[in-house]
Image (cartoon, rainbow, N blue to C red; front, side, top):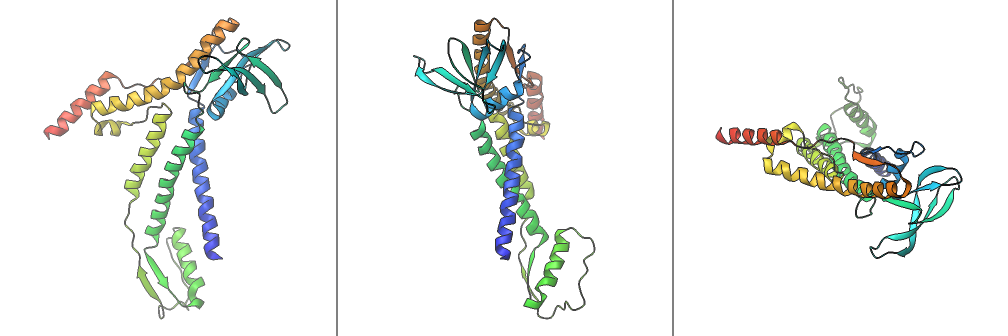
Length: 291
């Protein structure tokens, strides 16, 4: 019964950590792009949310309502010579439905591969969560480096003591009848791996940001990297970012041509490594090599 409860608690903690990391990456993903000159009736939050979750969304004008709309859709029908769908069906949970095609609407894609970002987010969230939970376990093991073998009638008292340790109590109080007679201790001292694990967690998190097209190395990271390594990392970031930005810009061009608008989109934060930063890193590496 106790083992089952512990397993349930551990699974609940696993889920909470995983969900936290999914949300953490998801919120970054839907915040990366800023739309310019978008008609005021278009909800760009919904637009980006749908692109991240589904990989595509349909822009069109409802002539009866005399409003532009951008809604989730299914794509199908015949494919053209470039392997692009030509028919779309837009729909909403509120009941709005409409069939459209390439002549009266434009599909905006999340990236040039026409994929959504959720598998990427799930993959990296799982990696980060596994390390976080390992850190949790290592920390708890450091709090309890010994296993007490006690008579059955002393179990509750020993458990109460361990609870006080887990709760970080400064003063541990035990009952008078808790005698050391009949107690034995098994040493289970565990090495402290938290620093290495935290470094691994940071590495996984940076990999996630790279796949999202977000710059991710800090100043201390720059000091440990060669200029070529920094440039290589920035190239990965830039290409992943460009993959998503170009798909949106292609849609902007088609929308502007079809509806006479002037819509544009840009990455919300343009933070690229400058040549000065690279030169500073080269100088730092040279100093360290000469020490």
